[in-house]
Amino acid sequence: MNHETLGKLMDRWSSDAVFRAAVRSDPLGAIANTGLQLSDEEMAAVQAVDWTLSDQELAARTSHAA
Image 1 (cartoon, one colour):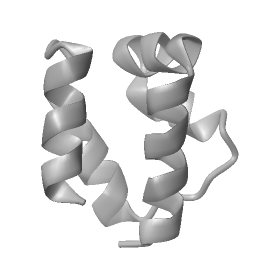
Image 2 (image 1 turned 90 degrees about the vertical axis):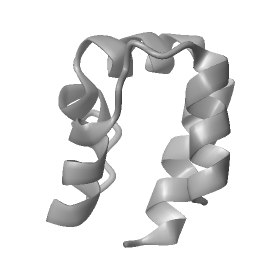
Image 3 (image 1 turned 45 degrees about the horizontal axis):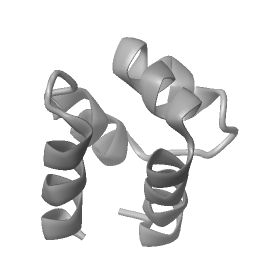
């Protein structure tokens, strides 16, 4: 996995409420709109996330994974 790309996504997630909402409704589309390129493995990880979790729960899980 490209940790730099994931870091950029995590930074955007934590600082941009509009992006968080877009990711919740269409994760792959919202990430594609950033222009960042994710590997197949990274895209699979995005699809495996339970986007119904609260922002706090998602942030906690992301920080544990990082």
